Image 1 (tube, rainbow, N blue to C red):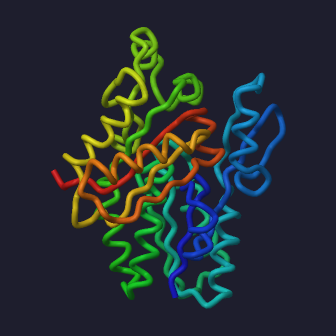
Image 2 (image 1 turned 90 degrees about the horizontal axis):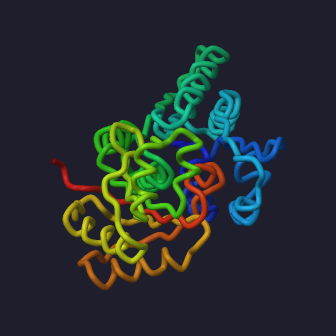
Length: 289
């Protein structure tokens, strides 16, 4: 039996987590001196309602290795023989290193354990790693072996295409996720940046004038880049405005040939700390170069 786990930055909905029995190691959020466990002690809607009124910029902390050890032990107790952990990119978070430490600590405590554990540095953020998690769960349901799932995820993780646009770049600047120089250019020209992941880090790939043009950019790039064989589903993410996500979904359905599932999911507090209110994202598998 295969256990699938991740850190809370994957931003999968509770319904999806329950459906596929995916466990999360929560990050921590420091909000004006008080520490909360992501998705355990604070939910996204509560966080976004407070975000614009905070006097101090929130900060995040990685899950402790013990959080991962606890999930692994629970999986073993349930009879799992394999554990797949997919973490946020090591280029933007320390969650991967913490997961590896958790794996090592588990084997130190139980050196004779036959359980196989594989930790993936997804090179993704938010629903990018979420996409890989759902795909892993679908493959598991279809009877794929642990080795087959690992081979697919490791082989295709850098092909998960990310599109992210935000209303305010200050959160990404303050958290060190993007350079101040890139942000100033966008602010000066009153442009909205379109970002993606390059080498496991956030990079600006385009600047569009207004949200409508951002959504148009997403759809046009999807048509050009989408791998029709591998993109079984799309994930559209949002922080505080679901109506924008619904608009993007409608545009994809009306303007492209894609007929698979399109999941709308809210970005959680960990990712929301860095991208702020009004963020909109899209994830799929792009063609191999």
